Amino acid sequence: MEFVMTRFQSGITAEANADALFITLKIARTHEASGKLRRILAEIPATELKFRRQYPDADMHITVAIGSEYWDQLSPEQRPAQLTAFPALSSGAINMPHTPVDLLLHIRSERHDLNYEAAVLLTEKLGDDVTLAEEIHGFRYLDSRDLTGFVDGTENPEGDHRAEVALVGDEDPAFSGGSYIHLQRYEHDLKAWNQITVKQQEDILGRTKEENREYASADKAAFAHTKRVSLKDTEGRSIEILRHSMPYGNLSRKGLVFVSYCRSPEPFTKMLESMVLGDSAGHHDHLMDFTSAVTGQAFFAPSPQWLEKQA
Ligand code: HEM
Image 1 (cartoon, rainbow, N blue to C red):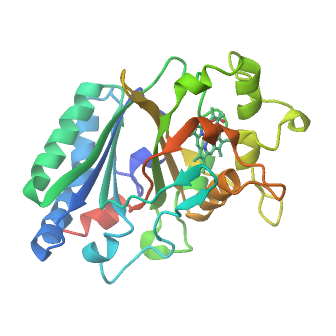
Image 2 (cartoon, rainbow, N blue to C red):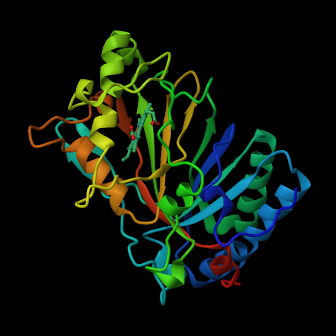
Image 3 (cartoon, protein in one colour):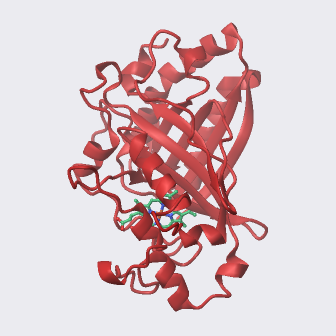
C-alpha cells in the first residue's frame, strides 16, 4: 500500500478505528510559544505519513485542530470564515457548557501503543509551553456500541459523501480541505439508564437495541435522539455531520467522546439546539436526561498544505 499526502488531513474522512486518543491542550499566550507551535504544526503531516508508512496495517491518523479562542494568536491575518466559539446552551436540567482549549490532537488507529507513541512524541516536542487540559482514551466497544449498549455511527455519511459533508470547499478558498470540529465529553448515568426498560431505551434512541433497526418514522417519538437530530434545510435536504465519537471509561467514570466534523459549524449547532431546546411543543432529546456534557469546544482542522506553510 502506498501512502501519500492528501489535500486534507486523512483522519477527517477515514473510517472508524478501534482506538483513539483525544488530547486537548492549552498553550502559553506568548510570541515564542506560538512560533514554536507553528513549527511543530508544520511537521505533523510528515509525522503522520511516517507512522502510516512504518506501520501500514495500523491505519494511523493524527488530526490536529486549532481552538477557536487560540486561532488569532496563531494566525492573526487569516481566519476560517465560520470559526466561532462553541455554542454553549442550557435549558431546564440540560447544560451544554463551553470549556475552551487551544489545541486538539485526535490520534486514532488500530493500535493503542502507536497512538500512545504519537501522543508522547508530539506533546514532548511542545514541551513547557503547553498544559494538558484532558487526555481521553476512546475504544471500540463490542460491535461499535456506545456504553448505553446502542450501536453508534450507523447513519454516518458513507464513501465519497463523507468528504462532501466534512470538508470546506471553494466557499472559503484559503481554508479548503479543512474541517470544523465540535468536541464534547459526555458522562453517562448508566445506573439510571439501566433502570429503565429496553423498550424505553429504544424509544429514546428511535432504534432497536440488539438488532440496531431504525424505527419507522411514524413510530419515532418527538423526544427520540434520532428524531431531534434528523433535520432538513429550507430546500428539504438533510442536514449532515460526520461523527467520529468513541466510548471511554473505567470503573469510576464512563461516557462518550462526541466529535463532529463538518464543512460548516452550522449543522452541529442546529442539531444541538434541536436536542436541548426541543421542538415547538418543547420536546427535548430524552437521551440527554441520562448523560451530561462536561466539556464543549470548537476547533478548525486546516489542510496539511496550510499546516506546512506555518514553518
Ligand atoms: C445517531 C448516540 C450525541 C448527532 C445516534 C445513534 C446513537 C447515538 C446510538 C444511532 C445510530 C447512528 O446512526 O449513529 C449518541 C450519544 C450521544 C450523542 C450516546 C451523547 C452522549 C449527539 C450529538 C449530536 C448527535 C451531540 C449532534 C449535535 C447524531 C446524528 C445521528 C445520531 C446526526 C444520526 C441520526 C439519523 O440520521 O438517524 N447517536 N449521540 N448525537 N446522532 Fe447521536
